[in-house]
Amino acid sequence: MSKILVVDDEPPIVDVLSYNLKQAGYEVIIARDGEQAVAAARRDRPDLIILDLMLPKIDGLEVFRILRRESETPVIMLTARDAEIDRVVGLELGADDYVVKPFSVRELMVRVKNVLRRSIPRPIAAAPDRVHVAALTLDVARHEARWGDVLLELTALEFAMLHTLARHADQVLSREQLLELVWGYDYHDDLRVVDAVIKRLRSKLRDAAPDVEVIVTVRGVGYKLASRPEKTG
Image (cartoon, rainbow, N blue to C red; front, side):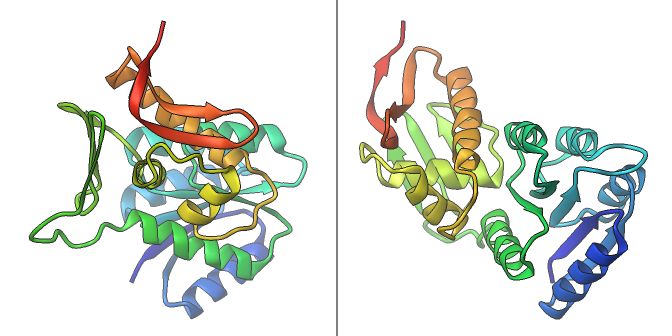
């Protein structure tokens, strides 16, 4: 049973989320402010956090920063419709997804299912599924990615994105295609969720391989992972 921490200070939203998550078979923990959220995450080690960004005591973005320094627990943000800057900052900090209030419970449940699917590793097989592209090696069973001998510290979402690009090496994938392949659905009101993950991946790849451009932007089309990365500079 996956354990989900719901962080929100609005009782109707907490009640709806708690009821539907429990009906779906999840264990639910509730936090109603930022201080409770940090304490609950440290104490209960949830598999997923649903985090409202408008919180008393410690705001949601600061809660996210604190938690991300301590773990890679996946996070779905709940944001107000007009809180665009918070969504962008949250995605760039490493959030896995976001849902805008007021939201569809059905849509949120789909996103919960898909985030958990990405983040819970499969049992290690006798012959792990490996993908090799250029100097990149992905061990899918262990959720490990390396550039040469350098281990890349990736979140589950970043690993899923890199794995998808690697399986389609040299093929340009649109942001809509990446949403469907990585997130598991084909609807979203903001394709920048893809751009934010690509930006984080590029930063980590450049740390490991500063002389080459591994992920290429094809303007007006999408992104591809190059099997023969071009040198930069």
